[in-house]
Amino acid sequence: MPPEARTPVAVLGLGPMGSAIAQTFLAAGHPTVVWNRTGAKGDALVELGATRAPSAAAAIAAAPLVVVSLADDDAVGAALRDAGPRLRGRVLVNLTSSTPEQSRRRAEWAGHHDAEYVDGAVMAVPQGIGTPDALLLYSGSEGGYRTAEPALRTLAEQGTYLGADHGRAAAFDASLVSVFWLSFFGVSLGISLAEAEGIKGSELVPFAPAVVSLLPEMMARTAAQVEAGHYPAEDTSISSAYTAFTTLREVIARHGIDTGALDATGEVFRRALAAGHGADGLARLVPVLAGDH
Ligand SMILES: NC(=O)c1ccc[n+]([C@@H]2O[C@H](COP(=O)([O-])OP(=O)(O)OC[C@H]3O[C@@H](n4cnc5c(N)ncnc54)[C@H](OP(=O)(O)O)[C@@H]3O)[C@@H](O)[C@H]2O)c1
Picture 1 (cartoon, rainbow, N blue to C red):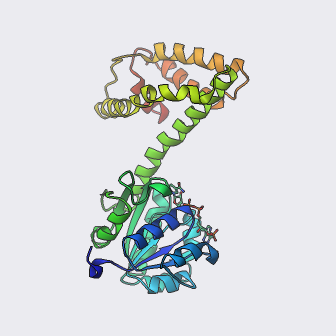
Picture 2 (picture 1 turned 45 degrees about the vertical axis):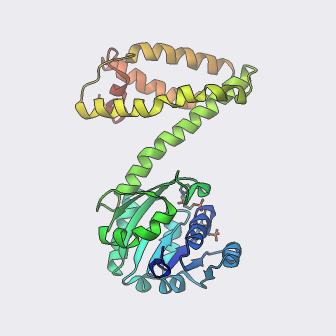
């Protein structure tokens, strides 16, 4: 990238994610101003060439592109409380995890201050920022996104703009992160059970791909059936899966391992069975989960 194309960037928030973002901008040659409530967290970045701003408002004043990565929306509110007037004419890209409603409210607030507001969701760990694995999702001001896009591409080549609704990136984030959190719980449960059975967690690892690789196909098929409103039991039915599920629960309960999450799942199965969906495929659990029996 020629030096004149390197947009000056302000990064607000230097937790692990904000620090990785600032470091990646610096490595790509963007003049980078950083601010963090606890200033010392910027020391390493200053050594790498960042400029430390004394306040969020001063950081915003120094760059046309402002990237925010704070703990949550309350932290964004606290950090930007007195900085609103400085946002005029800036592109504000908020990569803080938020609910869709928080993102829409934040967009309204930014609009009152004449900023172009882009909300973003980081589908990556800090170590992944700037690598080919990083995925960032954006929504909100398209003009703002297009202006910021060359700089944002340094964070993630796989940046995807999802549309003008400021809450859309956060809605994608929550939907995909649901898969992540419950999968993590599944990993924890699997390792607990293995250990209770005298098996090391690491002994399971070679077999993990056979299980995990089923997920994308499962998601595609479930989404297709939900969109069609038609739930054929192509490989297993709800009643047959519930029988296998009950056996698993029994093994886990016998070892005294917490069955709370499994019991919540079992309850959804039972609601589907009580509503007469036993012969349907597992995708029928989606409307049952949403309260549509
Ligand atoms: N880390 C990950 O793997 C990951 C992955 C995807 C998405 N994310 C998202 O990225 C965002 C940042 O993540 P992180 O891991 O860097 O989070 P973090 O370690 O929790 O960083 C929190 C940042 O928020 C600041 N902060 C908290 N309360 C504040 C307040 N009231 N006023 C001003 N600043 C405040 C902290 O400042 P101090 O240093 O002064 O405490 C710090 O800069 C989060 O929304 C997170 O969900 C993180």
